[in-house]
Length: 180
Length: 240
Ligand code: SF4
Ligand code: SF4
Ligand code: FES
Image 1 (spheres, protein in one colour):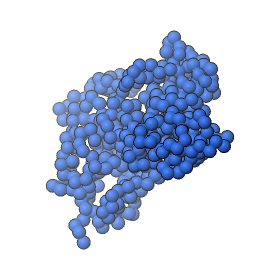
Image 2 (cartoon, each protein chain N blue to C red; image 1 turned 60 degrees about the vertical axis):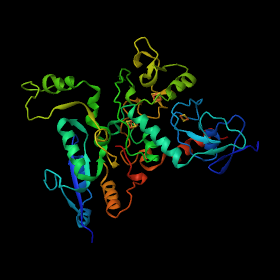
Image 3 (tube, rainbow over the protein chains, first blue to last red; image 1 turned 180 degrees about the vertical axis):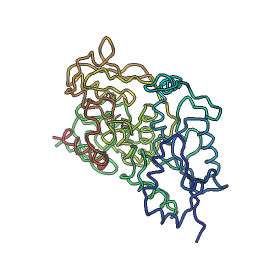
Image 4 (cartoon, protein in one colour; image 1 turned 90 degrees about the vertical axis):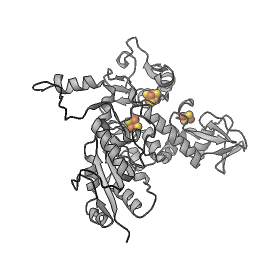
């Protein structure tokens, strides 16, 4: 049998809902484990990809400088990069802040918002700098496949991964294509 | 019966004097993707989604007259690829955050995306700044989702007799305006029972207090492709 596939996953500006939906493949995870190993992923708690990973699933868009760095590193190590979910594909809910100047967002969240205690805008050097706008991942790196949905359903992950694992060109039937 | 025919993808389709290609196709049960066309209103020809090849030339099926013997290509890979690109452009030129949109699942723009197997927006997103007008007690106007199809303009003018809507500006600055001194919907004669409040194919004109009435999985395009849905609704309008 050929070597097992290496699958990595990570989250940028997203809510981790796509990862949760992925886990909803439930007991099929055991079937998946027969053909694939998890590399970098919150599931394994591995922080950086191995030199060469076969499939990288990336959730979330780009809202700060660290997201951009993580995405570039991920792209470098993944043979196939997959943008997963609305945030990775079009910025999603975080991109709804794109209508509002960043300064106003920060003011509302940390100074003027209801119930704010000790108002101050966080300014620790450890905090990644925010981008003016939230962007989808394909605007920064080449993306090979897209799995739409908020989140994509467990069946969508399953269909996509089993297609790839058995050497078929992945394709999603009508019922698995959703933007919400 | 006139006996005149066009051919769409090799299938003979009869038509009557004055028919557009879209009208003849719809009557014959042939779906041509469309967004700004609605058989109840005069064609507008703005979205270009209905682009077909007529005797070798690209034309909008909703405005192009049928003439005897025309050879029309409709359901081809090339045309569907072009339509997918057009749909992607419509998405990136607006602010379409479907997970937060009340129209999701019942939206024709989304449904056309599903139909064409559009999985991403492909182009860089514009994230344009557009004004939301929530001033009216019963109707929300969210210009972020407007695709400038002018269906509300046509409905308000031709059915409601109110002329509430119009388009203003050019190119990427084009936007929907309302006919009141304040520029706000609340100061127009618009009512939630108007035809103009019902025709929007996307979530730009929403009647308030009806959001999320039908659960996910049971909304129109969760189960039914827009091709079947359109033909079911529109064939009777187009035929006798
Ligand atoms: S109008 Fe349609 S495409 Fe736009 S956000 Fe709403 S559901 Fe999505
Ligand atoms: S508001 Fe709706 S019906 Fe009116 S032009 Fe925009 S998309 Fe078309
Ligand atoms: S439906 Fe023909 S151009 Fe829009």
